[in-house]
Length: 437
Ligand SMILES: NC(=O)c1ccc[n+]([C@@H]2O[C@H](COP(=O)([O-])OP(=O)(O)OC[C@H]3O[C@@H](n4cnc5c(N)ncnc54)[C@H](O)[C@@H]3O)[C@@H](O)[C@H]2O)c1
Ligand SMILES: O=c1ccn([C@@H]2O[C@H](COP(=O)(O)OP(=O)(O)O[C@H]3O[C@H](CO)[C@@H](O)[C@H](O)[C@H]3O)[C@@H](O)[C@H]2O)c(=O)[nH]1
Image (cartoon, rainbow, N blue to C red):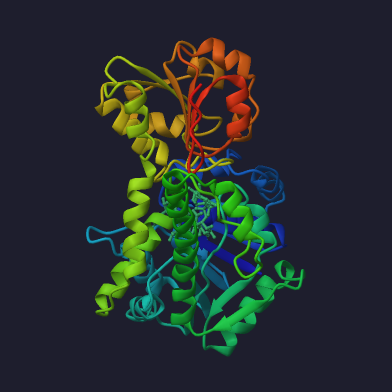
């Protein structure tokens, strides 16, 4: 089937590449000329494990094409995905200007029936708005479908090719059939395609992300209680996670959730609630707690150094908001850097994939190191912000030698307190016993 994907960022590129891989003829459209040229020339624009190989294959075999021209890109497409940004507007609600601008542009250039799919995360009622924006100048029949995306960065290809479920919001039988055909190769594992109305599909996406953010935040609060009561959050996690009603996943306490989705989507759902005069109290708490959680280790670092960080150097392991991505949007590392620099400390950082993006955003505010050990060479303490596997089993003798003080502040609970005690480190983690080496 011929399909088009408008917006070739994270979701657009994964969507386009994966649908090309399942045999469709895909054209991806983006207004960013540099991005389009790079992709046309075979240079992938995001770091996402497993994506490059299928991107190259489909590009070479001509099933994956890129253009900046919307009319050219949608020519002959039966399905047109909108994978456009929906960032928080000034009041925290999702800004629909990208989605609605493209919808308006589509009206006059649609030449035959097509299904326009909202892949972006959009508030309830957006499918109606997109429909109205297209209809204003449309000369042909069309349907607008809500098909939220649930992929996680870092495992996006697997999530897309083997989804737990596909949610499709439409009341049009014609659109339903086309979407069913497109998704058929991805749901052979027996996972369901769940059809519903557009509004419920839109809300499903916000409910899923907000629920997961709440689950993490609940465990972060349990971790904070553990610290006050002398319990261990890892034991509590195992104890509760084995209850199948709760489940083992997304129970890891740490220095808060980040990324391009949870922070903005929780905020957008809270705003949607406010707009219909509903006080969504849990979400307000989730945002509050996460705000504090992100820089939770800073006061402890200050306390270790007697309250003053002036002239101290902190080695920072991890910049991306989670492992296996170069995405630094809303990464807790950035909030920690801000606080450390504000307090007069210097930061030497290493991240396997995220350094270029951080440098692009904050420039030379910190020093970028070529590996984990150079980031702690001569540093006064180590702070861990992201659980990249390379940080999990370091040579602790080397770590001790390179650091001026044997002290680790671990925002991702990578090491066991017992091991740190044996090695003689001072070790401060989240929701567990502090070890004074
Ligand atoms: N990143 C994720 O993991 C993820 C997962 C699920 C859902 N989502 C949702 O998907 C949507 C897109 O997210 P993303 O992370 O891919 O965004 P992104 O910022 O990475 O990419 C958006 C792309 O759209 C392009 N664009 C902007 N205006 C355009 C226009 N008029 N015409 C063509 N292209 C245009 C931009 O140049 C950019 O390349 C958001 O609503 C997001 O919430 C994201
Ligand atoms: O037990 C956990 C799990 C995650 N996190 C943090 O939560 C954030 C988000 O992690 P994750 O959900 O794995 O990454 P995303 O790629 O942002 O994916 C989320 O956001 C996407 C965009 O909407 C959705 O499609 C996905 O389903 C949803 O998981 C990260 O900062 C993680 O460090 C924790 O602190 N503890």
